[in-house]
Length: 292
Image 1 (cartoon, one colour):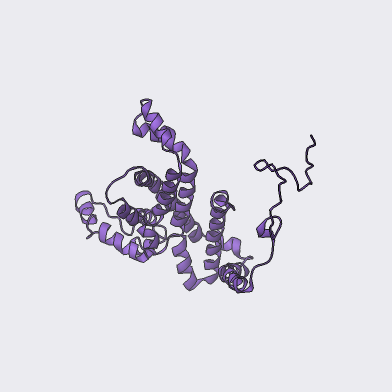
Image 2 (cartoon, helix red, strand yellow):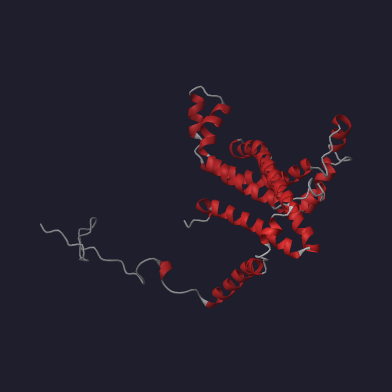
C-alpha cells in the first residue's frame, strides 16, 4: 500500500474512497491580500481619515515648541493639571464603588424594568454635557430637589466647589465603566459563582473571591475609560461647578479660558490632554483595538 505524497491532488477521499479533488476557488491565500479597495469606497475613506487626523496634525504643527517648557511650568497650568488629575481620579473611584455593583445588577439579576434602568444608566452617554450640568443643578443645587435638604440639614453645598467637579465628572464618566463591566460580566461564566455558593460561600463572597478576579480586565478597562472621560469633561463641570481657578478650573476649562487671552497656552494645554488620550488608547490597544 502506497501513501499519497503531500503534493498529489488524487489522495483518496476518506468518505467515498475515490480520489479527493481539490476545491475550485477563484483565489489562493487570504482574501484580504487580493485586490485593492474600489474607488467609490477609497475616496470617502481617505476624506474621513483626513477629516479626523488633520486637526490633530494642525495642533502639532502650530504648537509653540520653543516656549512649551515655560508655558507648561506656569503655576496656573500646574494648578489646573493637579486639580484635573485629583478630580478625575476621585470621580473614577466613585464610579468604581457604585458602578461595579450596578453593572453586576444589570448583568446578573432579572427584574421588571431592567431595560429601562439600563437606558437611564447609559443616558449620560448621549445627553449633552451642559444639559447634564443643568440637571445636576436642579437636583443638587441649593434650591434643588435634594440639594435644599443637604443645605438645610447638614450645611452641605455642592455646586461651585471641588466636590461639585467630582460629582459632575462622575455623572458623565460612570456609564463608560458600567457598560464595560456589564459586558465582561455577561461574557463570564456564571457557573463559577454558582459553584462557590454551593460550597457555602455567600453571594457577596462569591462575587468578591470568584467573579471580581474574573472580570478584573474589564473593570480596569472601564476605569481607564471613565478616568479619561472625567479628565476631559467640560460642559457639565462649567455648568455645575463653575470656573474658579484653584477650586473648580480643570484643564479643559483652562484651555477654554486661555484660548480667549493666550492661544499659545491653550495649544500647550491641549497637547497635554492629547498626550493623555493617546496614552489611554495605547493602554486599551490589546483589549479593543486588536484585529479579530
